[in-house]
Structure formats: C-alpha cells, structure tokens
Length: 124
Image 1 (spheres, rainbow, N blue to C red):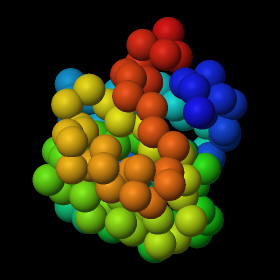
Image 2 (cartoon, rainbow, N blue to C red):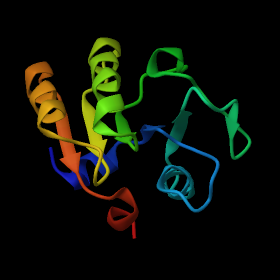
Image 3 (cartoon, rainbow, N blue to C red):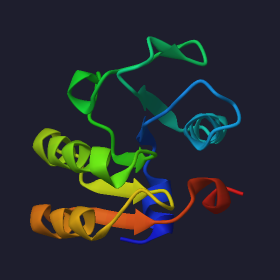
C-alpha cells in the first residue's frame, strides 16, 4: 500500500503523541487533525493532548483506527505492532527513525501494510 492510499483513510491514531509543540508527536497529531482526520492520541503518560482525551493503548480506543502513525522507538514499537495486529489495525505509518529490521520482519509476519515516510512532509 502506498502513502497516498493510507492518506485516504480517515481514522488515525498517533502512537507516542506528546504535549510538546516542538516535538513530532505533537506536530503530527495537530497536522492530521487540521487536515480533517479523526485522530486518537495514544500515550500512557498523558491524560489529554490538546484538550482531547489521550488513550493508554490501542485496545482502549473507542474504535479501531484505519492507520496508526508510529512516533515511538523501534524497541517500544514492537509491542504496539503486536497489539495492532490483535485489534485489527492493518496499516502502519512509520515516521523516520521508528523502525528497524525486527519491526519490519514482524510487519511481514503479521501481514500488515507499512509506509516509511514523514506524515508532515506527505501532508504539506
């Protein structure tokens, strides 16, 4: 699946979102929202992001996102991918620096779609 196809999906979750406007997790969240996406913030360390309820993991979201945007290290990402496969998310968008060989092997093993690109650039 290509970047364009993933960007056509309208329900996203940002994994590793944060409340620092200088950081990618926050910029990506706001950028997706400003482009009309339904976006769920996922980070166990926050109660809310930009005034929206923040969720601790994918399983606690009110709906299954069509795409998850990874803004966490590959080490943290492994368990997110495991959970994504379990809850039925099949599209994973990896920001630069969030993937490695073991994560990509897991993606293949689970039969998931992956895009490696910066969403901020893609939505420019």
